[in-house]
Image (cartoon, rainbow, N blue to C red; front, side, top):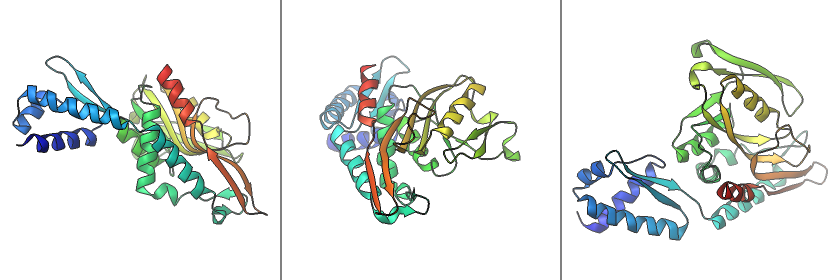
Length: 276
């Protein structure tokens, strides 16, 4: 196998399995290459990833060691993506009766889900999340995309208990629309003392995210972060203080058909996590 072909295959393998520790011995056997040659190839890949800002390679020494790809995304790409989302979300045709905003079509686009999930994974890369938690239904694709880049399972909180899921924890909470709602999570879906990252599509008052945070206490789990695709500027304060939003809905005027959407705090959150 030519070196150029080997590097392409190595890169593809790494990119398809972020955060997964891959054995150098197994890769060397699969590619028919010496481990020393493989190490040189990985050094080239590492330099390119760092130069482009698209991630890094982390090596682990020892017999059970290997290499893993840590996904990244350049700051400019994050900024451009969020700016494009703000532009799309500001379309007056998205206004629904009652001042609501239609965003389901955007969150149904694979390219949007992929990029948003990558950003969340980048922002929370140092949080040590072992599971990504969301509530059905609109937040599920976004959570799955984030979990893919973190290489962890997705856990879905249900609106009601299902017999097929066995014993569960159910709690009542007040949603952003001031309605009493119920959420339920099977005890088998999440081991106790897990580290959990909460991902959702939308946050108004923060009632749903706060309820999921409270539910995690029943599992003795630690919430290491909360990320939402869109939050609203009002009300202030919210029921949850510490969260990351990609976009912020600051105004919806049904009479003038004006919508104002601005970038969220994702850049600041990433810097704080990096500094930490």
